Image (cartoon, rainbow, N blue to C red; front, side):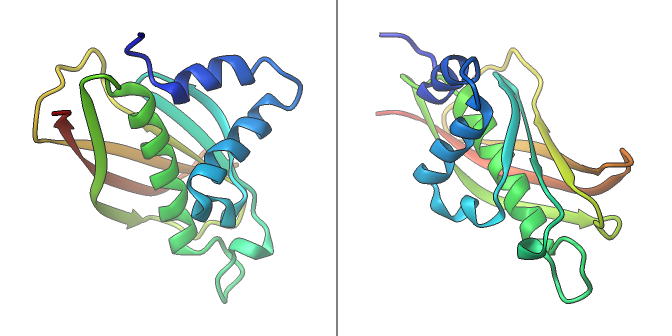
Length: 157
C-alpha cells in the first residue's frame, strides 16, 4: 500500500481529463460541502502546494460589493486543508485544523487566487502544530489577504 494521499492520487488522475480541475473541485466539495458555497476552482496541487480561485460574484459578496471576509477565510482553509491532506503521510499521520490568524490587507473587488505552501521535505512528528501560510491575490497580483492556519498533526495509533 502506498503512503501517498488518496487526494493527491485523485488529482493526478482527474486533472488529465476534460474538465478535470472542475471535476476534482466538485469531489473535494462533495467531501467537505461547506466549501462548495463559494464555488472554488482548484488550479494546482502537489505535495506542499495548493492554489485555488474564487470568482468575484454576488454569492460571495458582503454589503459593500466586495468578496466577504469569511469567503476569503473559507478559500484559505480549503487550500491549506487540501494541501496538507495531499502532503501528510497518510499511513502514519493525520491532521485537523486547530486555528487561524488572518489579516485583511485590501478590499477584494476582483477574482481572488489563494496559494498555500510549506517547505519540503518535512519531518512529520507526533502532536505537531504545523503553521500553513496562505496568501490571497487579486487579479492585479496584489496581496489582499494573509492567513496562518495551524494544523494539528498527530501520529496514527
